Image (cartoon, rainbow, N blue to C red; front, side):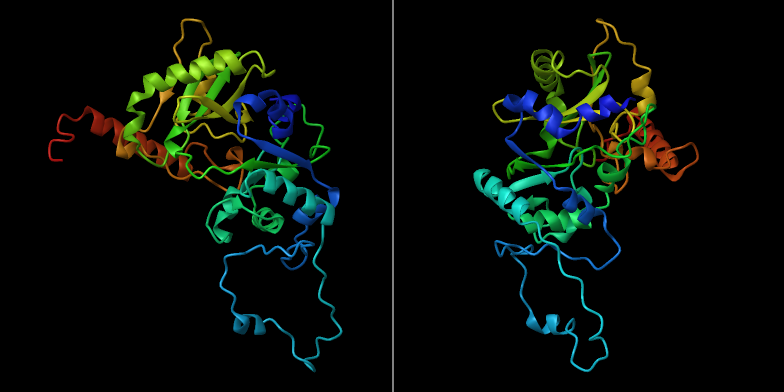
Length: 337
């Protein structure tokens, strides 16, 4: 994998080309001071001071008695240590505020490549839904997965010359409450040919996906008409969402291999696929309860996980595959259900 292939998957690079077939997104270049704020872990966890008086936790229950625990009383001997002042990013905050308003006041946020999926727990809703700049800052500051974008985006490149991109960007995407997880799919492109499709949410069995042949036709047509000749890499992945009227929307692009999760495939399987016009696209879904995979929303890129033979992940996957084969071959499966 090359640096240019990783760079093409940055949202500020691909979104302008695919704007008409994606979800509405507004993108802001981040000041270097905000990037430094995200990387700084030397002091206490501080949220930026809001010039708009916006609360990072607007739905919290205010309890003044709890706040008294953090106040330093006079004569405690700590007067000589001045507490650090919270940072402030007034220009960025006002730009973000305007964009959030134009996106119906609720957004999903991400950096060049990644979203702060590992810090959803810290929000009042338990999701990545944001309505203010300080909510975004809270999710970003609490996230470990964003460290990938900030420090390790090029670690898997065989021509690595950069430690980080020149600029970082904040992408604000319109929030849709009704998105159905079973209608999200990851598509694998090798040699500029669609070779595989995987159910994106692999932790659940969705009976609706039994109509996967119809879904395959929709995704294949979308790829041929909107993606194949417009994305410049030969090997890559892209995520799509199929809405109720059967239109397909591209959600994201990711490099082939490296930190991209292969989901119901393995990268070894995908690398061995022969690219030919006769080769059919393999569409994998969770078809049995025992084929459900664990939640792989980790705080590190996929290639940082220990998946080598004999590792815990390797043994888990082997056991799951053996159980699936046993149940599918047994004539008694389902007889007692």
